[in-house]
Structure formats: structure tokens, C-alpha cells
Length: 345
View 1: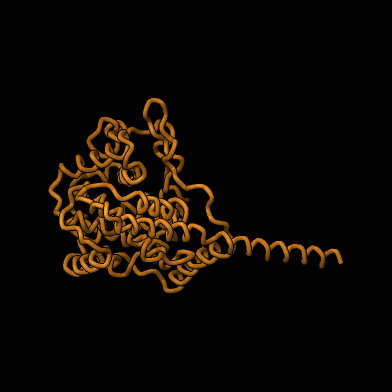
View 2: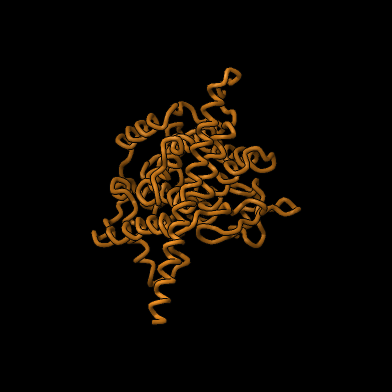
């Protein structure tokens, strides 16, 4: 009797909880729709002037992107940009340059973390003079030391747009709507302009087509592809126990697109591994959709993390938080700084 009452109470609680999840789960989607509508009204206003090259996004599109980044799909977007690195490594001109600089061999963890932090600093704080503008200046300063083709720049930028959209479509609790995809595209178009990248397509569809054409011409195997890919995988697995690393590598192989895997000469994961890994990721999307309340507070590792001395200590890191103790200044990120030499020693 008591067991039946307990089961009934649990069933009632679960039903009410799932109803609450259903009522709240799509509130952020409704917000993005309102923001997109506001952005359209702004552009239709007689007083509106089209955005000039390099100028900031309108506030509505930027807020829309931050909802996606900090509330709706923060983990998927972060993971997708990490796996997007392998697509850039599948282009020999990019991987050969990365190998030639020596940064990946000397300190791969710092190289990966600094690249991510510089991009995050600019995207999260575009109008904070001691952060966003300093970050984009530092990015351009680093890139200015090397001869990098505009097409390689554009291809790398495109992965920050296309891969999050692809991952959310396959593994998210819902697909992005067109206005959300366009917001990601527009944000990175502005970032690309500030990086002095030329001939950025005007629409997401044009960027997708350009990327596919570029891959058909340039995505081929080179020893440097495999070398840089292996170093990056070592960063992702170094904190795991030694006996687990082969399994983690197999999981990673299962998530790398086939054409990229071929260009890096990586083995194909067994079919059952691919099925299990993708089923678990899709299952997590279903779990979030039906059993998890929406995020009420933004997932952001850099907000309110600067001390009085101007040093920033991230709340967490994708791999290992190398700046947890001493923090960093933006001008110290990347190769060539005094801090970089101290770090390597």
C-alpha cells in the first residue's frame, strides 16, 4: 500500500516536472524570435543606415547570438569549435604553416587554449576597450607575422560558423531556426572583417557553397595534417588515465567527418562505436529537451573574472585550466610574448 502511494506521488511529481520543463524549455527560442523581429524592424526603419565594413553588429543580433552561446547550446558550440580544428588541419597549407611555427610541438595545450581565449575575449566583450579590441589587435598581430592566404583565413573563419550549426542540427535538443543560424553568420562576418579577411560571402548559403568548393580543391592528405591532428588529440586525452586513451581516440575518430578523417589518415571507428557515440549524444539532446529546465544563468567562464591588476582567471577550461592560478592579460596570449617564453620554460 505504502509502495503504491509512493509510486503514485513520484509519477505525479514527474508528470508535473515534465510539464514545467515543457512550459519553460522554449522560452529562449521565443526570445530569439523577438530579437530577430526587432533586428528586422531596425533595418526597415527609414533612419537605418546599412552597416559599413568592420562596424559592430546591431544590438539585437548580438543579444540573439549570446542567448545561443550562453544559454541554449553552450556545451555543443564549445565542443563543435574544438572539432572544427580538425577540418582546418585537413588543408595542407594550413597544417604546414602550423607545423612550421613550432608552437604546436613546444606547447600544444597553451596554443589551443590561447586561440580559444582570444576569440572568446573579442566575441564576449567587443565594446570593452581593455578586452575585445585588445584581443582582435593581438590576433592580427600574431597572424601578421606569417604569410597566410586570404582563402585559408576565410576557410578557418567559416568553420566557426558552419560546425556549431551542424553539431546542433545533429545533436541538439532542437535545430536552430534560420534567424539563429544567420545571427551566427553575421557575428563571425563582423569578426572576419576586423581580422581584415576579404571577400567574405554576404549570406550563410554563399559561405556554405564557397566552403564546399574550397574543400573539393584543397582537402587532401599531407604529413603535416596528421602531425598537427595527433598533437591536438594528445591535448584532449592527456588528462585521462593511460589505459583509457585508445578508447578516447576511437571516440574522437567516430566524430570526425569521413572526408576530414581521410585527409588526416585516421582510421575509421568501428560501426558499433559510431552508433553508440552518436546515439548517446542524440540521447543527451532528448534528455535536455524533456527532462532539463532551461539554463537560468549564462554559462560563461570569463565574465567577472578580471581582478584589480587586470589579470583574468577563467572559471573553467575545456581541457586543463592553465590560467587558474596566475591568470592572463590578453596581450600575453599567443606566441611571442614574454609570458609565452616563461610558460614554455
